Length: 103
Ligand code: TYC
Image (cartoon, rainbow, N blue to C red; front, side):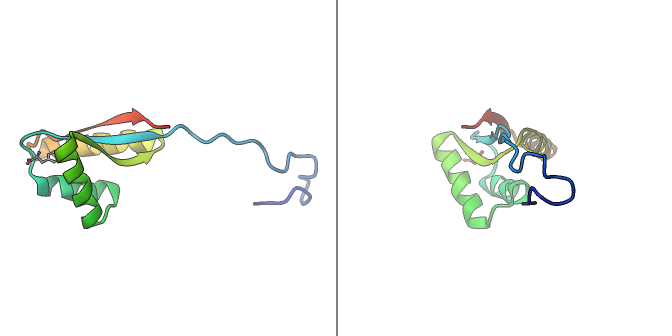
């Protein structure tokens, strides 16, 4: 954090009010056909999850129907949704993920 007195900043607000950006959940949906291993690999590759964490989220989605892979600002979340859906389509799996407002 820079100070308020150096280099001509004395008249500036020292701690300008900043607003946190809105956050979005990337939600993974269950289906009957996508292999469990494929979902785990997707969660590891696109969401940086460990094998254990990815497995746990996959099993949560499998049993509960949906689950949160991660929470991001809009552009990041939207990009991950596109990449996951593209990857699933390329491999001819019905896996889908979507965006949801957080907070
Ligand atoms: N239900 C799938 C199966 O039994 C596994 C699965 C888990 C699919 C999570 C999608 O998001 C998903 N093979």
